[in-house]
Amino acid sequence: MVTARPCPGDLLLIDSRASVQFAGNRALLFRVVSVSDRPTYHGWIWLTGYVLDRRGEAIDKREIYVQLAGLRPAASQTLPPRRSRQPTATRSG
Image (cartoon, helix red, strand yellow):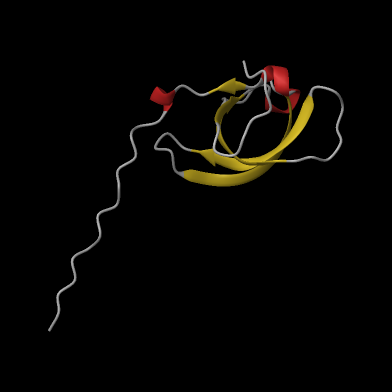
């Protein structure tokens, strides 16, 4: 459970504990991009971020309204390690 406001870069699991809009669906793996400062009901927050697939690739950008008490951090083992992209060799001449 997340007790503090999420920060950009946080990786969260979003499911029915965060909001009824996610009931019946698989949990979303969600990378936070921004946290809105607009007023909401106590304990609720607007988050903007990316839904990630099993490889950690962004598949959808979403803005979601969720309860802080229902947010869960995603385990670092949830995603495979990211491979750095090797620059392609260029041939001259």
